[in-house]
Structures are given as C-alpha cells and as structure tokens.
Image 1: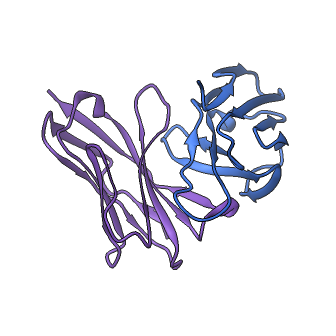
Image 2: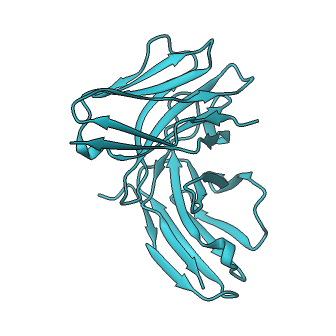
Length: 117
Length: 115
C-alpha cells in the first residue's frame, strides 16, 4: 500500500487564485510528520511547510497552509493568491515515528502545478 | 552561504565506471541522507547517516556505498555503473536528535547520466 498518495498528477490554476493540492497518507504510528516540498524546473527541492501529528493548529507559512485532517489522514496543501513562480512539482512527504536520527521520509509521486497568467 | 552542497552537479560517464558524489552541509545537522529521483520524478531514500553512523539502508544494490568521514559530509560511491543508475541524486540533512520538525534540507542534486 502506498504510504503517501497524491492523486493529482497535474493541476492548472489561474494566477491570483487559490489552489489545493491533495495528499493522503497511511500510517499506524501515533507520532509522525507531514511535509510539502516544491521542485521547480531548475530541479532543487525546496521545503515549504511542516505539520506534526500532534499539532492541533494547521500549519501556515506565508501563502502556504496545510489543511490537516487527521481522521481522514489527509494533509492538503493550499496555496493562496497563486503566482507564476508557483509553477512547479509539489511533493507531499511523511516521516513516521518520533523523529530523531531514525526518521525515514516517504515521498508521494508529486503534483505538477501550472499557473496560468 | 550554501547550506547543503553537492559535487559534481552533472556527471556523464560510461557503463562500468566507478564514480563518487560528494555532499557537505554547513547547518550543523546530525543526520544526512541520499535520495534517488528517477525519470518519473519519484524520490526514494537510499541511505541515512546519523553522526557518521549508518541508520537507514534501503534495498540498494551493494554497488552503492555511502561514506561519512564526519557528520558534515556524506559521500556516495557507485561501482560498476549501469544504465539504470541514471537519475538525479539528492543529498539532504536534518537536525536529528529529539522530536520536532526534523525538516530535511536538500542539496541541489547531481544529475547522473550513464551511457
């Protein structure tokens, strides 16, 4: 079974609109962490946002917010006011276990977002 | 101020050769990783080191051998390169120790092409 599922291989969004990128996860651990990374066409992996399993508030970082629904095991990324520079691949990832030096992070297959002017 | 750096950025080589990729981080992190990203953009962990000690070793052919001379460096040596080794290899690091964000910060990647 996939630990991280991103069901949208590609998405389009109009500039200045908000967009939600879906991510569902599967784990039996109580302690885990969820991440989103952005990979532009230049290839680097850029950390966007983190949500811990015990965090009660949804994480926010500027225009990025993580819509964490624990019971549904979903961790969707919301990008508000899309910009042309947001066009990129977006990866959802999960760290299982309590962290420390033993963490293993599993990545989803990614969603390619294209922002249309 | 590069946080996680990798050399070389591009590597083109013939099948059967041996090559190394170097990684250094100046973030003071305890844990370092190697990932492989294939042509379909799928990112998979290969190895993880914590304070120079091997922690995670996924099912990677033993032609791949990581080496960590100190906690700021994690190198990847690949013997007898095969066509299927062509990919982008990312090094990453994270603080390690304790709970919390444990965010992994990635290097720029090394694009390996085996001919």
